[in-house]
Each structure stands twice: as structure tokens, then as C-alpha cells.
Image (cartoon, rainbow, N blue to C red):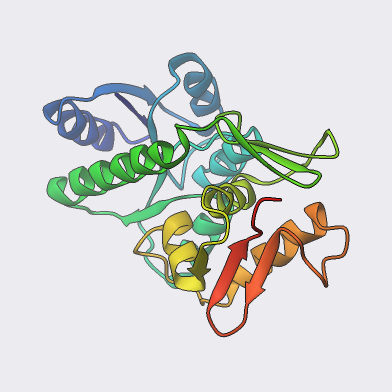
Length: 230
């Protein structure tokens, strides 16, 4: 597996390279945000670590661009700031985790391991099937793609992640906490009500009548479920 770091500080590069190579990972590096996008395409890393303050493009912008391109690679944001506003920006940009400088070698190592383990677990949940179809909606798990009446549905990476997670077990009820933990991880600091916003956005894109959903159904007082197969 390969870990990519984007950071303009040489001292951080030395530390992170030592940590990840000691853990048995390959390592690649970019010194600014623009270079990060180039290196990412060339190296195809399994996990990305982005510093916030970088020349040309900051870490939030790089994260946003990677997600817009459809990448679901785990992303850790590095920042000297630990306030809730800064963390909120990072998570909204599509980051999976947030680490405040200075950090311990063990903490970074554990966070990398946890994100890669979660990614492998999520992939294993759907690897036995290529797709699932309910009515006019078809979800292709490995292609990260959803189609409604044969036409591609433009979903953000997190919207697809939620939809695919629920669709992998039709009829199973997921609480808002379960969905938030699956998408953002145990360290998510936002409100539970935030998941309702994502559910509404997905419904607007896939439901004929979002007020009477066929696919993403509400189970009042509990959470949500993906409709049973016809």
C-alpha cells in the first residue's frame, strides 16, 4: 500500500516518511497543492495526507478537487489549527480524518491503520456483488455509479457512499449515528441531524417523489432503510 503526503514543510515530510515506511507502506510526496493533484494521478495512493497551508492550492481545495473527480481514497487533513470551524471546513471538503500539529508518531500510525482497515471492510461488504437494482434505480458498487432509468445520477462521493451502504443490505434499518460513523468515522463532531440533509439531497436526485420515497425510506424514530427489492 502507498501513502501520499502533500506538505511544503521538509521537516514534516521527513517525519511522515519515516512513520509510514516503518509501518511497511510505500511513500510518495508533493510539496504544494498543485503538485499534489499531479502526484496523485501518477502514484494512485491508497491514502492521502494533506497539509492545509500549502502554496498554489491549500489542502481543503485539493481535497475538494479529489472528491469532485470521484476519488474515494481516505484523506487525512493536517493543520496547526484545532478549532471546530477549521475541522468543519475539512470534513465538508470530503476529508475522512483531521489531525492537529504537532502530532505523535503513534497517533498518525493508528489513524492511518484505522482508515485503511475501514476502507477494506467497506469494500468487503459489497465485493460479492457488482450491482443491485430496485425499480428504475441501479447501483454499481465497484464503479461507484448509480443510474436511474439508465441515466447516470450525479452524486457526490459521500452521497454515493451513503446510498451504496444502505443498498448493500435492502430492508436493514440504519440509525443516523450508524450512517454518520460509517461515512465520517468515530471522530465526527457534527450534529446527528446532518445526515438528514444528505438523505434529502440524495432523494432529490433519485426519487420520483422525494416526499414519498421509494428507495431511501424513513423509519420514524429509528433512522432510514433502502427499500426492499421488488
